[in-house]
Image (cartoon, rainbow, N blue to C red):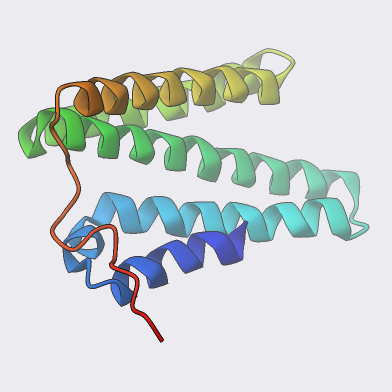
Length: 150
């Protein structure tokens, strides 16, 4: 997952999508996903004391919650523009932290996170579906990249 996140940034850069890389929310979302993937590999692949594993899991879930929030900000940007995204940024980041806090307060942290992720993906599906039906596209110039013949 970490390599895929890093590859997402690299792919956008290689495809001439500088506009995608100018969006700090997008770059930070990919970076948080890459960090969470690395932490997940350590959490699941290395024998650690329980206290260390617990702290690692907390950091991992904060990273994932923030990344999902930033993905939601990207959806808002694509669907409703830069100003709407700027207004939604603190709200959606707060929602991610609230998700993390609720999961910490009540048992089932990962289920709370999964519900937050599902809501975000439903928002994305609805927004991009609406844009597809109405012929509006948030895609920057040059995206998707044209395939070059060898």
